[in-house]
Length: 406
Image 1 (cartoon, rainbow, N blue to C red):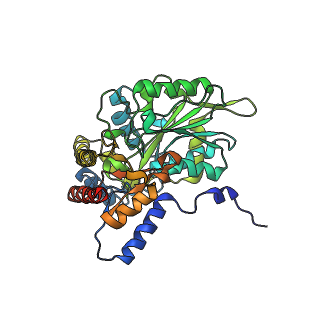
Image 2 (cartoon, helix red, strand yellow):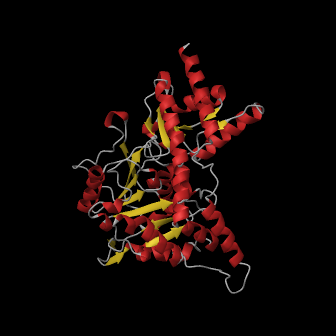
Image 3 (spheres, rainbow, N blue to C red):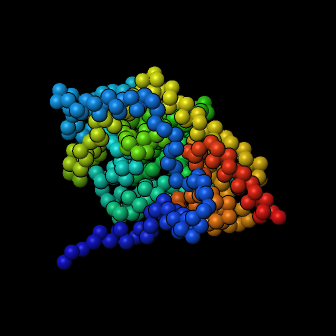
């Protein structure tokens, strides 16, 4: 008899962003003349940088000639891109990462969800709360036990280390700058997690998809800036929110060769070798033309163009943060990340706040409850919108808030 992986039955019926899309679609069907402003799902709106467009055109032209045509590429990624990543993102910060430790993918979401394929299903998992849903859902699918480290206003949204007297989690997910709260951790705060992982044999799965938005001095851009991290941390990065690759799909994962795992027989195996074996079986690699496009953002022109795009979004974040703060809301984030974490007024729950802004202000947000128990009572706003629409959304929210007070 055909059976199921019944762990899937433990998932919520709809993925968070699919549920938001369903509710927004239902509203639009009932109110076809309403112009919605979307500040919810974190998709970008600025066009691809000119350097990326030029690289795409050149790579496409190469595919038209037998001499330059590329078919299947290496599952780990072309060396030209891995070398550009190492030089541009790590060597430039004095960090020792080798190209053979870099694995190009089709976006950080894929690898953060798939990486634990190579790890035992009896490993326990710790996530910060609120949390990017993929970390929880992918481990729920595998049947792992998940615990939460609450990040609350009362603790400055900084997660506490696990109780020293309790069992240590084998897998720990950290995302900084954080999605959804927009917060960051200082080097000493992150060093505590590295030290904990080293002393307890835990593996840190560090999502730094938004590192390019960091502007505050002293905030690490990579987990490998912390002493000992090469022995206990895997880092995930993405070109989606930095260079607008949400449609092209490209990112990468760094698996240092210093990380080894012990088998039940007592032998040790480099984690990078296991991940390479997994990828060669289940992944055919990111398209050549996309990897050439990613390479272009490391050129002087590409870097300048990416910085300009990030500056545009962070100006949106500043506008939103100042506007919402002037309304008396205690806004978190929006300084080193393109996300703002906003508490609901008058004791509303997250979905009620989401629904009223949708129906009454015609602004789409993301309800915090979808990010975990500690997200209840908040919404997430993104700075990825068009400038004029961002300004209009703040006017609508100001008018809506005045209505509440009136």
